[in-house]
Length: 34
Image 1: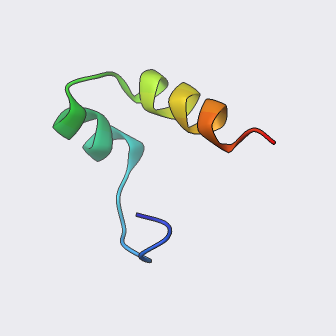
Image 2 (image 1 turned 30 degrees about the vertical axis):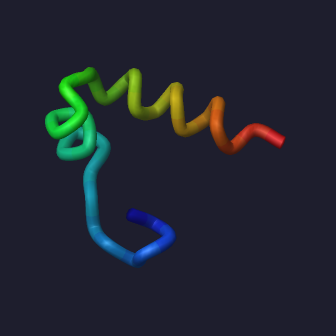
C-alpha cells in the first residue's frame, strides 16, 4: 500500500489476510529489516 500511495490500515490488511494486526506488523518488520 505504501509503495502505491494507497491508504490501508493494519487492521484492514489483517482482515483481508485473516490474521491479527500484530501479525501484519511483525511480518512487516521482519521483511524490512536490513
